[in-house]
Amino acid sequence: MGALLALLVRWEAWIYGGLGALALACLSLFWAAYRRADRTPFGLEKDAARRLQNAALAGLFSLGLLAAAIFGLNRYAALPNAPALAGTPGPNPSAPPAATATPILGGGPLQVDSSGCANPAITLTQPTAGQQLSGVVEIKGTANPPNFAFYQVEISGVATNGAWVTLAVGNVPKINDLLGAFDTTPYLPGQYAFRLVVTDNVGRAAPPCVIVVTFAGAAPP
Image 1 (cartoon, rainbow, N blue to C red):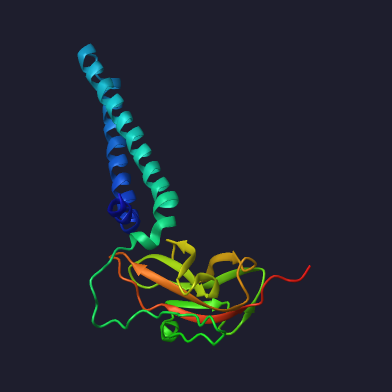
Image 2: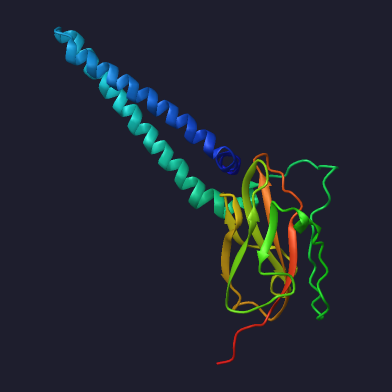
């Protein structure tokens, strides 16, 4: 099932294009059968034409159901599990290793590799590195590399024990636009690493953009 969902995410546009072409074929068949039934004076030919019309309508209905099912799977099954669906592509010796963050629970500063932010097609513009955050935060940036498939915004810090936790996922390219939003209130105060990871349509992730921010914690009552 996971492999099927991954294929649906990567080839969604092509699938819809194929379904659209089939729908046009069904419409053309329906129109040809309609004209034939309207013009022929023979009862048997009229019946055959009407059966062809019914078959074309049934095909259109089935294509509509299939498109709705694919849309539902992509929006409500595939995207929430996008990190698991990205697959495990083979190593790419020309790509640098992905940046990681290992929070120092004793209070030391986080050390991250922010070199991926130099790529203008994969960058975070809000929040900015070193910014102090509280309450609900909007995450903005650009996720628009060639062969784009989907992006993930992740966080790592004291409250996550060094693990990367997904905050937002999307399958629409963004250019200096809203990537997602989240509430900092449940998180312990301290430093956290943000990263934007963008995966292409063959399951390869480019070097992520990683920054460090500080959570101020909940405001006192």
